[in-house]
Image (cartoon, rainbow, N blue to C red; front, side, top):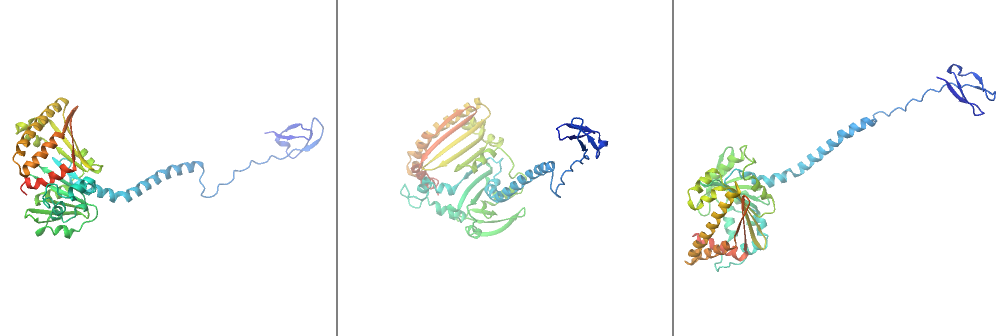
Length: 383
C-alpha cells in the first residue's frame, strides 16, 4: 500500500512502501525529504479483568431484572401470607357447593350506630333483660361479642339439618374459657383432629373444634365431624355454586348469605304447591349493610327471563298471602301479635322486581323496628 507524505511546499506525495526510510525529491519544489516508516495500527486498549462488554452487560441486565422482580414478589408473599391465610381460613371451612350459608361481620356491626342502639341500648318494649345479647353470646361461646370478628353458619344437608358454625376472632381467643361453657366435657378425635363434646347451658348437646388461635367451630358432634372431614378433603377451597357469594364476604358487606337450590332442594320445594314456582330459582344471594339503618338487598338467578317472570309472580302471591296471615295473627295480641305487626310493616317496605332472568329485592329497616323484633322474637318462640 503506497505511503503518503506532505512536502513543506504543500504538495502531497504518494511513495511506494518499498521506499520507506529513503530520501525522495519533491517533483514540485525539488526539496529532498525522508519517507517515514509505516506506523503500526494502535492496538485496542485492554479491557480490565472482569469488566463485561456491552453485549455481556445487556445479557446481565436481562437476567437481573426478572431475578429482582421474583425476589420482590417472594418478599411480598412472605410478608402477607399469614394475614391472607387468616383472612380466608374461616371462609374455607364453608363448602362452596353447600345448600346454604350466612356470614355476619359481628364486630363491625356492633361499632355502627344501629348496632350500638339495638344491641346495647335500652329495651323498647318494656321488658328489661329479655333479649340480653351479650349474655347469650357469652353463654354460647365463652366470648364477648366484640371479640368476634365474623360468625358464619353453613348447612350441608337441609333435610337432615346438618351444618356447623364458624367463629373468627379479632385476636387469639382463650381456649379454656371457650371450653368452660360446656358441661360434662369429654375429648374425642376424628380423622386425627381433636375436638370436645358436652352440653351447653341449656343442656343441649354441643361440640367444639379449635381450628387455629383465631378460628373455632361450634356445632353438634355430627356437624363438627362434617367440618373436620371437609377441612381435610381436597374440596376445601374448591370452586362451587356459592363461590361468587362467598367472595362477597371479604368486601364491605356486613351480612352475606347464599342459597344454592340443588336438585334435592328443588324436589322438596316441588312438594309444596304454593312454592312450586320457585323451583326455577338457581342461586339466591342476600347482602346487608348496617349504619343508622339496615339495608338488605337480594338477587335470585333463574334459567331464563320467562322463568324469572313466573317466579316473580309466585313471590308476589306469597307476599300477599303472608300479609293476610300476619294481619290475622296480629289480632291475637301478645308477643306473637306484636311481632306479626312488625312483619306486616316490613313486608310493606319490601320491593321485588324482575331484571331479565334475575329477581331483585330490597328492604330497609330502622333501629326501632330491628330492636323491637329482636326483643319480641324470643317470647314469640316461647324461649
